[in-house]
Image (cartoon, rainbow, N blue to C red; front, side, top):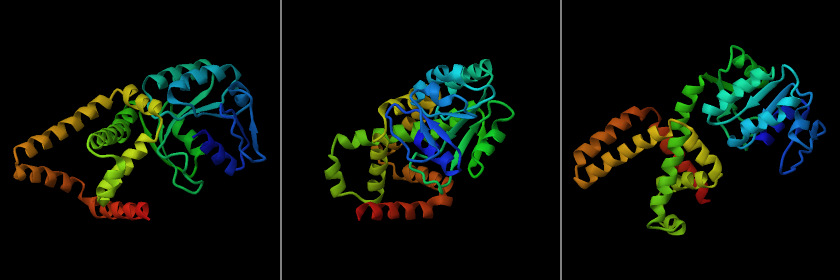
Length: 271
């Protein structure tokens, strides 16, 4: 994400100084590589901290002495909770402004792609600062608590569902055996699971464990699976179809488009 935001600001003609442990250079006349995090923030009006989530607070403390008074520090963690409470105190202590956002996209998004960001309200100027930095983005303001609760559904639940799905499949079939007899819906589901499992175990464990709402959504998922299992064991087609129908009505507005997307994704992956 650090490279994404570097490319984003460079594309708008804004000079960027970056510090990266991997020492990956960005070839642009407006880009300068610093030898340290503290060196990268000197004199900067805007500082973006794009580190592993569990290093965000540590990185802020590392660069704080070198921050210019009144600078805007942007943090992009996907779990706010305890970290944001610490960052707000640290920002106040050092006389800088804090902008807390959560990009709802990945680092491969093109410069013309739709940027959608949650903006967590740390003070009355949060939304205006976000608009100034990301004028073309879709901004979704919310509180820190609501953010983490929503991410319990959007991230925690989605991740744990796909990890469990892959775990269940692995008890019976290898990926190649599965692919040989897959259907469009099962193929897309396995692709989602593989996409989740391709990510950093450290990042995903943090998202699950540090979000205080993760266990709530895991319990809801377990209850839904337990209900379906009971109906299957009782061979109760009537109640199964009733539950299916209830959920179908709730999501009926997207059903046709969703199925079309499933088949499109399957056809694309099969080429």
